[in-house]
Image 1 (spheres, rainbow, N blue to C red):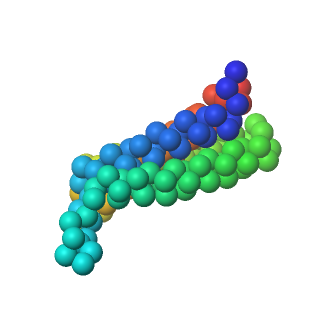
Image 2 (cartoon, helix red, strand yellow):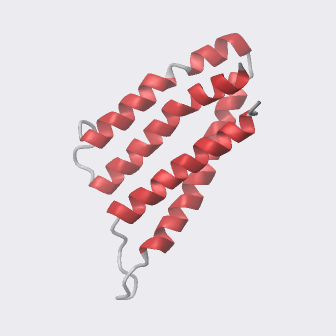
Length: 126
């Protein structure tokens, strides 16, 4: 049986890997002192930062789901269509039309992570 911490770790790592892939593919970091930026260093920074943020989101959602188990677990399922719609809409350009592609893709990954968390936590708690 998988515990909630393992589910949080899995979803956080998947989201952080997605953010790092977006960083390598589309993010154009600014030059510092006329030096060319290192995209792998930038991807590593985004991987660590978003890994921590996604893990904190997962911990908060698991704590909320544990408040009143039948109601709050089902209530978190409202985030599934919201997260998936935000992920889809930003990836296709329906939302954030003025943002560059890297920003839209990062927001898309974050939306998909928010949509996956309630499903993962519900499966683990059953």
